[in-house]
Amino acid sequence: MFGSETAVAGALAASSLVVTDDTDRRRETRISNVSVALMCDNPKTYDTIMLPKKKGGKAFGDVCNFICELAEAGVHVECTAVERPEVDTVGTKRLALALGAKSFRLRSYFP
Image (cartoon, rainbow, N blue to C red; front, side, top):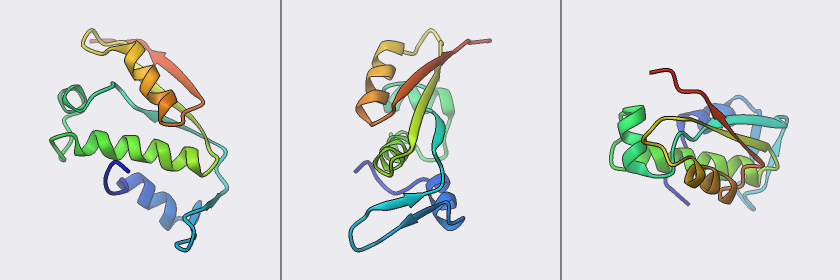
């Protein structure tokens, strides 16, 4: 979808909290709710805010993929973002919901 699974997704799979059946890609999970910091709606801003080791949109893609994987597994995903001046909060909410998140919450920005 957006790239390789994130370290968090891998940790969840390794912990047996999320079990993947390779034959049909359906998931079974014991997790019912997860909150994911999406932070913004585009890779460039994500790299500027988060300073990830993976550059060029790869980290942003991993987060988006993680949200999709959780939503497809039936987990209630809440995405959050910080109300920073450079963040399009409307666009970020739109992206979160398009990726499968059930809710979106803004957090206050304290520079």
